[in-house]
Length: 307
Ligand code: PSU
Ligand code: MN
Image (cartoon, rainbow, N blue to C red; front, side, top):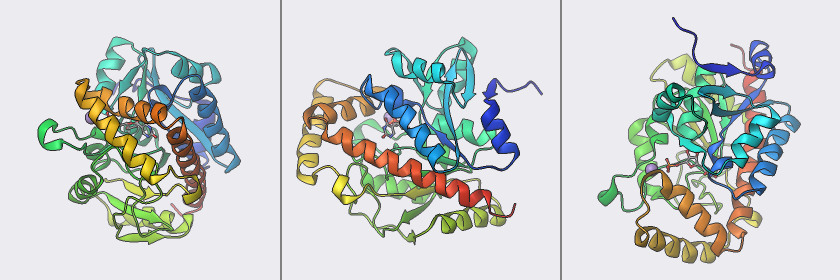
């Protein structure tokens, strides 16, 4: 067997070997989801939050055709600074490796690589999902199908509210991906605390998430993920009226400008930041920070769960 084109940083490797808590972080949110130069600062803050929570951060990206699990400060800068950096879903990993390319990994790319490296807990902002207008475009993020066959726990503030949330929840059900609401019986709404949609399972402590993870393993396959929906606190959410109005404008602009494929999500997120005067960015950051903190606690509870 050839060795996989993957470098696991020494810190992450040691932590995994000792069963010390590790939290995977994605790089697309840094490269394509947040405005420069704030994005680099956020990338560092997120890693610091993981450390404060007693876990080791493993930010994941592809550099010079090799998957990097755990980035050095200068590698993190490369991800944040390069405006032409590619966005890599899991299907893009092989071409990127073969081409010796650089790229930021999405939820699907990150979850795949994290699981390959033996990392069980992953924090992001909002998952990708089914786009509105799906009947015309069939645009459904590859995040969903990858999570249906990858044993990883993803802590997120729901799915991005730019999407068709009920359709995305339906797809998660069809694909057999478990969804837990963290201290809520409503699926979170990314920029908003609640999407208004119900979730079937509510947990209140990280230990309960770890128990569900252990039960997944005890039951055996299929190797699906566990989604933990962690709402942004209400006082930090985007004003729902502003959200609905600006999102409607963003969707109209997206259609008018003929934006398609991988460009849709960054376009919509960017439009919201601009047209809410940064209020959507604040809510997005609050959501991601909360998720990273909770992920560190879940990884800690998981590290204490008997193997
Ligand atoms: N969460 C955020 N901002 C982001 C993303 C998630 O707060 O930019 C990224 C993730 O990497 C996710 C991707 O996988 O958006 C979804 O893109 P698409 O819809 O093209 O699959
Ligand atoms: Mn898409």
